[in-house]
Length: 227
Image (cartoon, rainbow, N blue to C red):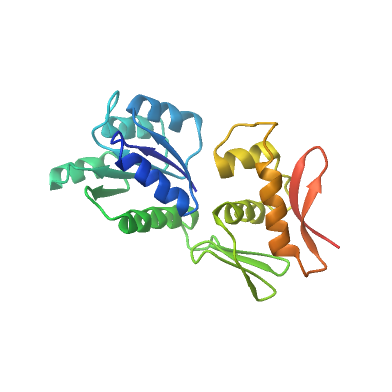
């Protein structure tokens, strides 16, 4: 998932960003509420984490502006303001969850995953696992297998494969993959996409007659069965 974190604590913010990135998410970290509001206006996020007390614009004001603009993205408050009235204010303004500081990262991750399941599976009929040909990927157990053989993927490989499995038959350009997986704007000099695609192919195609990731010359890559 792509997550925005508004947190002005120079130790806590990077710690949250690193932990969520290690868990397989793309994370934008901002310290100013005005910049956060601009970011949620121009980018598509799956979840937003807001500190209550931030420079420029406080987290509660950011949320109120989001909801006034009909932005439905789930919001989790992270705040030292932990009194009942503070939590109620956050939830009544349109927040989806409230986590008081200090907190354990495992609890934060569990709450983020819960919000992700709520968004991606609102009626319990949206799959949390994907199958293409004989390849399977489970988003929550983070396991991958092909023809029953377990495949170990690193974080970036898992994200790449998730994108392909969610969009079978649709070409994914290098620029799209750079932004979705590495949160980078297009850089024609980087070979990070090609390198990771090559490693992913080796893991999911080696030993199988059917190839799954096809290069579309001049365009990008597509998930497609190819003999």
